Length: 451
Image 1 (spheres, rainbow, N blue to C red):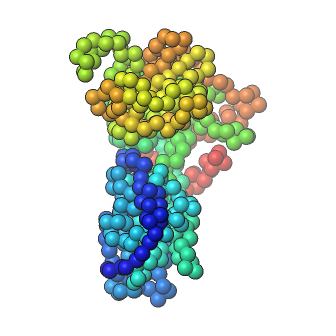
Image 2: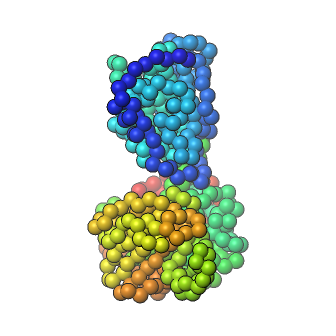
Image 3: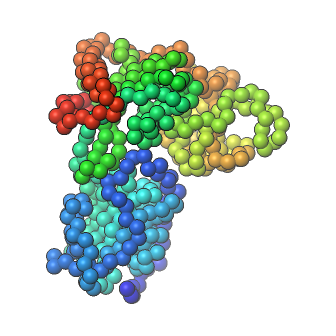
């Protein structure tokens, strides 16, 4: 295809800057996909209506497939690690002026610099003059919310679609043999479900690196979301019960009359604490809290007042508790670092970051993303160095919540909570009679009242 076009320098710079990614994080694939992502391809297509197989609702069900003709050119590609829409379209020799025009439409509904991810895919339709007629972009993590750009009256217009997902409840019971991730994998589920348990429910009350023992039992009642019979991602964990030799805990998802949602134990006490045990998705710790550690770079014993978490570059780092940022920038051996002051004399520090996403003086909430894992400063490889300090004294992050209790539900909500607890208990017992039992549609609907 030969296309001749002329564009202003400013338009070209706009397209280049806006469509370049902000170092996207590689997806672990645990969330599933709506449809198999296509490889880069070019096809000729012709449709009497003017657009080939118009996907008016954003679904692939209406797509009629390519036909050999010269009226339209259909381009498809899947974004790779550190890829961008701009780079992908450039590889397929799309005119830069058309890229700039497409970018202008996309920016109305979608931030192409921040939200593109490896595994996202698109379909672009060009007319025989090289002009964009339609652009269909499917985020791998949220395929039910594709972006559709169409030419209407010589102008490209974008909209984000919201396609329905089927919500199905599953129940499972599994015994720990080595670790939580392996246990979840044995029932055919992915790391995203492990993260929901370790980070979203028990993140402040169970240390899944130290506490589990062989023979511990996990029972789960959880949702899986589907689009056209294809698994998309996990929904809510409705109830989780961990019966262990070191720790036992139950997490029940409950939404109060004001719409506030949280996880509570069987007595209605919150599982939330002032601090989370982990400042990033649960991945394992490479170096435990140790005052006398042999440093791999300095080749001598130095105090190691904190915990190192193994993680790949770009992994999100979040604040373990709410507070105010008192430092955001370079800090000697810690490289790029963030320090946060918390209530009651506490301070947390996050070092060796590749990126910092907050500024000094900013107020942050618990589990708010503040940076990305890196290897800046004195580091042998990508990891997060984390410290927690109270009144100038370093504490062990792994034991910070030991012996502490969460806030109880108000008395006026206990009746509703007990009703919900008992309903989920019955369902959990029924579902875990056979591991990983699939719920029926009717059973799924009976659990819908709680958002």
